[in-house]
Length: 144
Image (tube, rainbow, N blue to C red; front, side, top):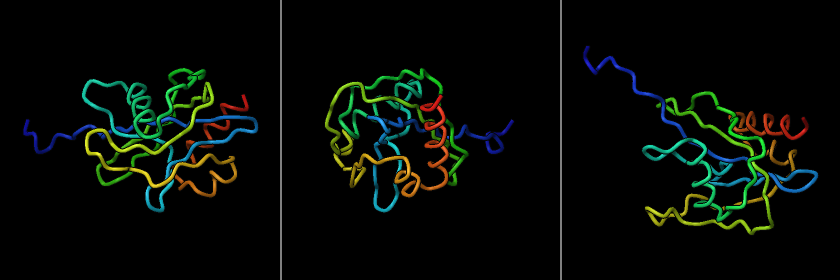
């Protein structure tokens, strides 16, 4: 069979919906006018959960995360022309840490312009529909 007709697997990115406090606050990352949770693409041989943890540490300096909900994740519908899918995990900040924007370790460039802790209502207002679905999933887990 010719490789011209073969479909490549959809690229996958993985991230973490980080929550702290009661009522919960969520850490959002802004790139230009677009808000999202910290996330990035998987590296070769990396599991989605390992990629999500690495991306959070690289992008926010946060490492003390409690994945009490395990490895269940919210998968977005495909987006971008390549049909990319994002897989979001839910984790609680396990100890007080300061989130800080860090440059990409490979390129030295900053991928975000701002990090902000926000309540659910503000997160709903800032996030686009694709990512808002992940927030609603996280809120359902938090209230269960």
